[in-house]
Length: 584
Image 1 (cartoon, one colour):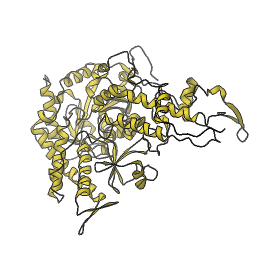
Image 2 (cartoon, rainbow, N blue to C red):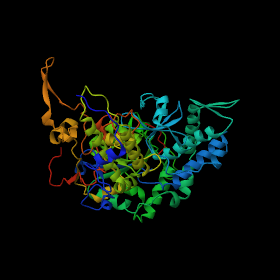
Image 3 (cartoon, rainbow, N blue to C red):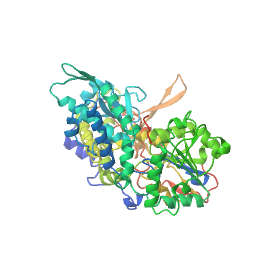
Image 4 (cartoon, rainbow, N blue to C red):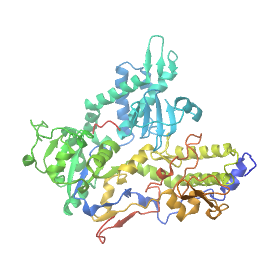
């Protein structure tokens, strides 16, 4: 089929876009967006009626550190340390921590010194060198396929909230050396007349400084001396734990922090919450210095803590000596579950560390998981205010679909360069609303690597652990149904790329003699990338626009994106229901 080839103008695109998008339109909802704050979002069904044990991490879960003041503290400690070991003093004088820059889930390429924001499959969405964002053409010079392998050793994944100062330090150091005249920029580092500094060695120095900051306890000491400045109060914490006990549930605390720091933080949280008894009385079991994620693997010896001195007793604790409301250090998940008499699905564990708390407890033990994402409230606020850009993006992708609907296998490729720029500008506008590196969860219609991990390993997630207080302990959190693209196409033909002008009824069936199966093809439309109301990707990730997705099955809206869907029902009337460092 011959189709006249022409380049769509901006006017043409705007005219076509009006079919799918009205400027100023927003996602409609029957309720106030503010009602979503305090919600728990669901990836997989969880019946609280079947949960016997509620486990908690401490740092960034029960003890939430104030942002950005806490990150600024970590950044200042790191830069001072790096200058003391030989880095230029301009690192301290010329760079101040900017909370709008770093976002979790970035990869640091130790070979080329780039910070990478990637999607669920490892396709590069954004590449930053120092504070300079590389163009798509420049990205291909380093990564010809715009793809990285997440498991490759050269990439360090910065997944935790404690990594935010580290991200900014890495960017600042590289930016600084790029600006110093006597240093010449090389692909894998910088060189002066007498010195060569690779990006790998820069990363090693930063990592060693981070380890020094945590291992020496400097950050913790400053925090413990002034918790009012650095730690959020949790006035409802004792109420939540009391309600859990009143409903016959048991509670435990498992943290990587040492006993002295745990004692300091928990005393602050419960004292400021006007607790009517000592904080240890609210937990049936307490484990400090757990060394997660090792705790969920081979573990270490579980030792009894002398609560008066903080010293550890010699030898491992036996089952006969294991007592409730006493503090232990180390151990392993297998030993712990055996001592408390629990199976994996008896436990719901709440933590902020996607790897150390959520992924490992799910994979190794089969625990039910609740991911705490402190950034979620802001993500939801921006989503509620700027989702018109998402609707515009979906409209542009429908325009792209319509363009291809007039082409078949004999046609020449259409010129969609103007449309690509339009898509890229829309994605950039959407991303900039979240910060300089965009959203934690997506870029345009493509989900980030962090989002894919959260959806895969977190059964539930919320901005705070306290949100669970809003639900009955007989509640059934029920995940929204997710359809595969071929199932969506049956219910809604437009979801499979069939435009109104080329409906599915125009298909003809052709026989496949080698298999005996029937295949259908479009008589005048060879473009069949699935598009549904909750998916956005139609272009290839390798193109200049970063708004698209290779595998639409991984671009489902997350529960908090689908603001009009509850996804939860009460189970009281239902008998049956269907990578990185860790210091804390």
